[in-house]
Each structure stands twice: as C-alpha cells, then as structure tokens.
Image (cartoon, rainbow, N blue to C red):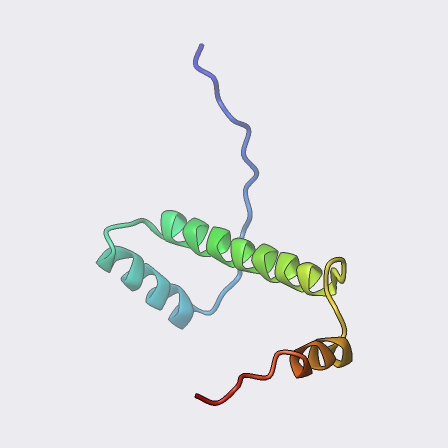
Length: 82
C-alpha cells in the first residue's frame, strides 16, 4: 500500500473571467490550474513570511546604536583633505 498524504479540498468561488484568465495563463506555462494556483499560494505565503521576518529583524535593537551616538562617533573620524 503506497504512502498517501491526506489532502484537504478547498472550493474557490471566483468570477468566470478570472477563472478563464488563470486557466489560460496556466496553460501557457504548461501547468494545470491546480499546479499554477498552488505555486501562487506558496509564493504569496513565502513573501508574507519574509516580510514578517524582515519586520521582526528591524525591531531587534541588540547590537545597534542610536542615530545620535552614531553621528557623534563620525565626528571623531573626519577625513582630512589631501
């Protein structure tokens, strides 16, 4: 008996014009609508995760300094004209 993954079905109610556009684009890419939509969902999910992680890293202040401290440190390093 082969290993089978239990999959959920999701029914999407979309306008016929959008369905036709998706179906046509998928066909041009040599894919089924299911394949194309699955790839689109995964890409969107990865973008959302990347965005969330990026925002979280911006909130991490460990190892950073304030703008005032940075500017003060730059005053000490003025470049001498040649």
